[in-house]
Length: 248
Image (cartoon, rainbow, N blue to C red; front, side, top):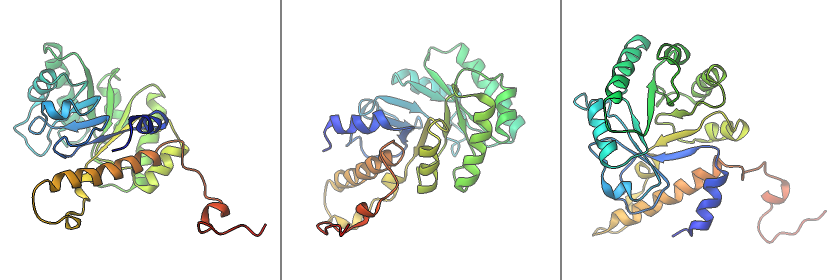
C-alpha cells in the first residue's frame, strides 16, 4: 500500500479533487468518493475524507429527499441535487424545487447543483448561489467541448465558484488543460479506475476484488499525479534509456 505521506504529497499538489464514483468494496482508502443513495454506505463513508451523495439520473424513483436523507444519515460533506437531464428551463425548475426541500431538511452540508447547457444561463437563473456547481450532460463529450464550456462558466462565475465535471475522467487532453489552467476546474468524478480493471490477471477464486481494487488504486494515483504540479515537459535526458550515458 502507498504510504500516507506520499499520497498526501499528491493530494496537496493536485489542482482538482478526483472523486471515485465506483464500487471497490471499500477495500482501498481514497480521499474522495461519490455514490448514489443505493450504493452509499458506512464502509465507503469511512474510507474517504470527502463524501458526495449523488443523485441517480438513471433511476427516476430517486428524488432530492432520498439524496438528502442519505447524506444526512452518513454525515456526508456534499449532497447533489437531482440531475434531471433536461433543458435549461427544466433544470432550473428542478433545482429551485430541490433547494426549497433543502431549506426544511436536517442536512446542513454543501450542495452540488448539476447544471445543463447553457450553463451560464442556468447558473444565473438559479440565483448564482454559493454552492458547488456541476457541469452535467458532458460525460460523453469531447474534451474540447468540456474545456470550452468550463472556461465560459468560469469567466462568468469567477475564480471562487467551485466547478465540478460530472463523469469526466482526467484523460490526457483534460489533464493537460488542468495543468495549464490550474483554476479551470475544482473537482471531477469518474468510475474508470474500476471499470478498466483487467480481471483476467487473477486466477478464479475468492478475493479477486481485492486485486481489482489495487489495480484501480494504481490508476487513481497515476491520474492524480497527472492533474498535479509534478508532470513537466520531457527533456532528452528523460528519454534516454536507463543506464545510457550522455555524449554531451
